[in-house]
Length: 305
Ligand code: IPD
Image (cartoon, rainbow, N blue to C red; front, side, top):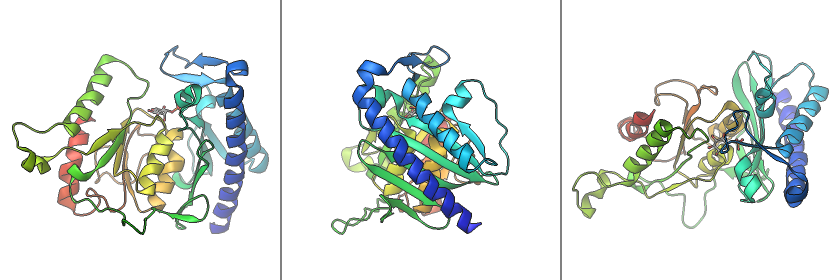
């Protein structure tokens, strides 16, 4: 029940903070001690470090000890060939380091992501970036917070949270991922092209016909979704990331009043965390209001899927 979720959230927060310290320490020592290996496919764009493994091991063993009945799905565990059956029982879905490439390069957009599902629904989420000391947390029905006390979405007194009325007022995030096959990259680049470019011969004054203000790419799906929850990004979409990248952050986004979908569009029902196609829209964005606007603006992205 309710109380259990509170206990789970508190435990996950402590664990994430402990992992955050491990990640920071490892990052200071990484040139001397951390060995970098490529993903199991040998893909040089899909990195795993010793720290990913150690952090996941810590999370897994701590959860096992405290909640022996719970299920566990982790990135490295899965990469090591473990199969899991997704059941109704509470299940932790964990990415020890989301943004491994950033971690390797010292780009401070790195997070540990700990999510929990109950009856297959994501209900608890903790995403912690130890480099920027940003802790995003949520449990179902109780709102989302930054550093435990600041409620999300953020709303600055001056200026107030913008409420754009058109996709041409949107700041958009997307990622290119580790699948570098030409077809996949072609689709992703095309989607960015159509979001950025002015259609046909329209004049600047007609530009409301549709291109976004900017596209960002930060290298961590979990933190990307938290940016949307925070209200700093209007829309994030990605094809190809995994349940451990998004589960925790999706709870945070939902609790911040945002909207997510995993497949074709807004009419597809609740998010499928295993869908590998994710779209996150911030609360109050142009895509999150009037149904016609939402539909027409989402079409652009759906074409890519
Ligand atoms: C990756 C990051 C990246 C996204 C990839 C993910 P990892 O997670 O979230 O932003 O583009 O799809 O796999 O490998 O750093 O845990």
